[in-house]
Amino acid sequence: MEAGKTKRSLDDQVQSISKCQSVLVPEIKTVKGFEIALIEIVKILTVSYPNKAVTIAVLSQTFYHAYRESVRAVIQSLCLDVTLIELIQTSPSLHIEKVDNEWRIAVIAHLVE
Image: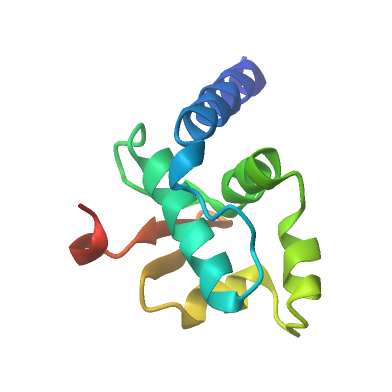
């Protein structure tokens, strides 16, 4: 039953991204553009999350649905030698922490409109 909830939840999130496609960075050509894309996706996804954080898995899946490219592929195309977690840790706009063996990402509160 939990898997069904996860699937439905992901479908809802993909629909949210589709509705908000206009706020996403059209093409990711820079690290800053990538960071902005991640921030916008987290903002969109956290609207429906009571704790205002999403897992790294949900972020990655939603990113793929929005851009038709994996997070790893974008990191490689930007010639970065880091993981997504390491990149998020360097962002002053995103907060990441490990909770119950899952990485959770949130936008820093003062940046949320």
